[in-house]
Image 1 (cartoon, rainbow, N blue to C red):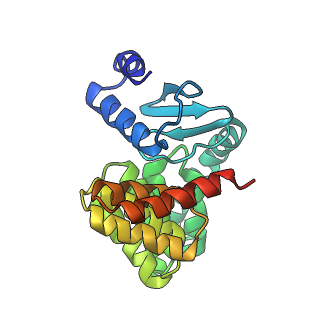
Image 2 (cartoon, helix red, strand yellow):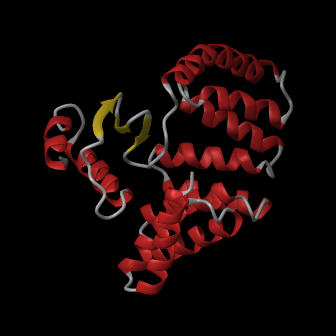
Image 3 (spheres, one colour):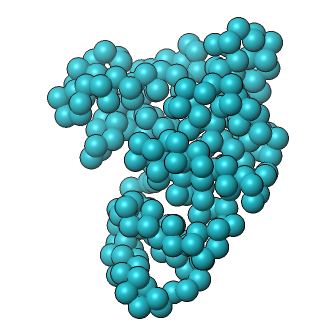
Length: 230
């Protein structure tokens, strides 16, 4: 299935990116899980995996919005864009939270403007942890994992138990080739959110690669238990 998908997708997306996306997809799936229920397509410039009603980006494993929510976000984006432009011109929105909310509305259709809005929120409040996390994610998606790492660590400095910041940090560190640091980040995420199945799976995979079978099995067992939880 992966070879067939690669052949079809490479006609629309550079072959190197297709190979990376499909490699990440194979890493994301539990060992032995059948691929017959998956559908791999291209949406814009992204390789997207669909299973039933769920959809996620193959590169980052990030879930995508349902169509109705995405359509609503697209309708809201022009309003947010105009608000951001007016605020930049007149300084009409001095608060960090105002800029943060504008950035959230811009993420789907205007990621560059969203990054700018998050930066403006952080200029007004450098301790806005969620703005650091969201900006880090957008930077990572744009191909800047090192900058993303900086923002995730700044978020954790403010809120050490911010599970999303710790998990995203782990993903960024993996992409930077720092597997041991990534394991520590996933473990930190699990201290705050033991129900994070993805963190268990990623930690298990990295422990197994280093030959730490007991630790790998412990996380894989927790991952499978969470999947069975209704």
